[in-house]
Amino acid sequence: MDVDSPQYCNNLERRRVTIMFNQVLKQLWNARRSNAWIWAVLLVVSVLLWFALDIIYNYEAAARKPLGYDVDGLYNIELRYNWTTNADSTLDEDNRTIYNLIKDYPLVDKICYYRGDEPFSDNRMYEGFTPHSDSTFTVSTFIRLVSPEFFDVYNVKPIYGSIDSEHWSQGEYPVPVVMTRELADSVFGDASRAVGKTCYNPYYLMANISTNYKVVAVVADQKPFGYSRYEKMIYMPNQPEALPYSNIVVSVKPENRATFAEKFYADMRQPLERGVFYLLGAEPLSARKEAYDLSHGTVNYLNTTYIFIAFFMFMVFLIVLGSFMMRTRRRRCEIGVRMAMGSSRRMVMLQLMGEGLLLLALALLPALVVALNIINADITVNTLTDMSALLFIVTFGTAALLLALVIVAAIYPSARKAMNLDPAETLHDE
Image (cartoon, rainbow, N blue to C red; front, side):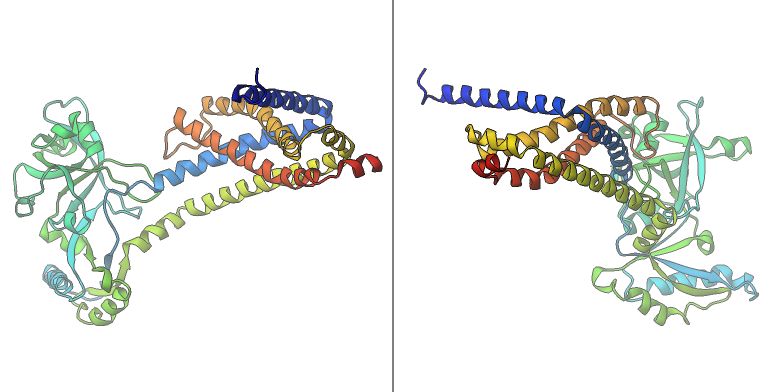
């Protein structure tokens, strides 16, 4: 075979890699006592790092999924009641006047009101609904009673059907309702065919109250706050007379958002003091979302997990760095002999890197078994994201990759130092 042919060069390169791999295995075996504790550390850290990454994925993946509605530029108008004032007779009239004053405020773009289930809070309302086609089961769902403008303000678009604002009223019969896709699937079996079908509330029926609801539209699945799963939701018309007990939400154009809360309070504090009502302020829903996530401790929990991950990485870095620094110092003569016999500086570095990475690979095998047993015992944190084969591959693979990068970074200084050894001086010193 021609020594200059590509095949000969490839065979020679494969032979060199095989020889180097055998040398790395032999070196690891010869230093098995000193490698044992590094292997044990890598085994434990691999499992802990995978578990921490699984926690991170569980929450961060859920937080990055869309809410199903848009809160950018939305403000909750916070009104309070001074019940020391006797104005019960004008309650409805005062509230309607307040609503119209807010609607006519120049910086307000759109306005709506709703009650029931409130996003980014612990105020939840739920009911059960049963299809007329099959009364053998009831599906529980959260419920919001909203004005017709709600869907436009929150940018909730139908994926099936349409919402007719003129007929969005509890005076209609059957009462029009809008369901999220998950709820429509649960009640009717197929969300794409839910529009036009009817259902009823069995709890009202037991109280001899006739209920009949007709699905006019199906919208995307929605979440009550950032770090949560999608939950079933139904929208129903809110009565105008329920305005005093409803939340008022306005949307503001981007150019007016920076100072809207301050200007609105300064301009409208006195005009909105009517009867028992007074203005407390305008709260951005984006700020309420962040505050709710913080109040639940999820953000602090995630920050703590990130700190643990950084600690694991730093610990592995220091252990591998110190170990290979001492190992390279002890093996100066061996490295000098290899280089004197024709081993390239690149091969010296690759061999040292190979020792660290092969040691990691030997630790990852039992770590994989431990991780699978943890999953089998259902000890993982899968409150928001279900465990799957793909999720496990991503998180465990990420843990292995991070450890590999740390090991390479830790070995590089000693490998660089070994590459710069002068074979003649090294052998003379020895």
